[in-house]
Image 1: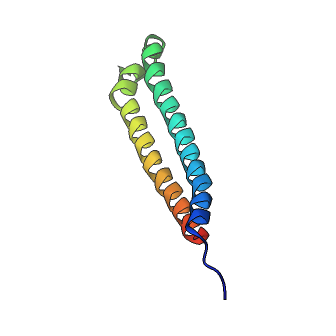
Image 2: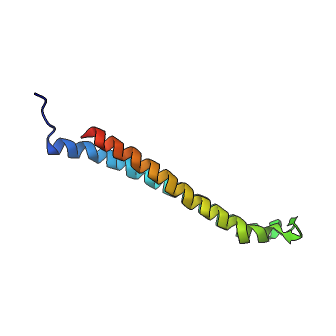
Image 3: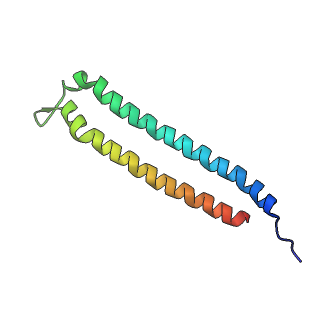
Length: 99
């Protein structure tokens, strides 16, 4: 008859898996925060240079501040939600297989 794993064995197996999950979560969060920082800082820092270019008679810096950065922020939130859902599902499946 197959033996059931002891509770301590299950806990030690889950611990490295949880660490891998949080390492990947933190790494991805830092990457997206860096993208957010570059977007915010880049538009403000290069506003004078961007104002030299026009789009439909308006400076491109206006479009970047009014619509561009907002769309980038929305994309960052969407990418975060999509990737975290996939990552959580993956580790949930691995946890179910390990028990």
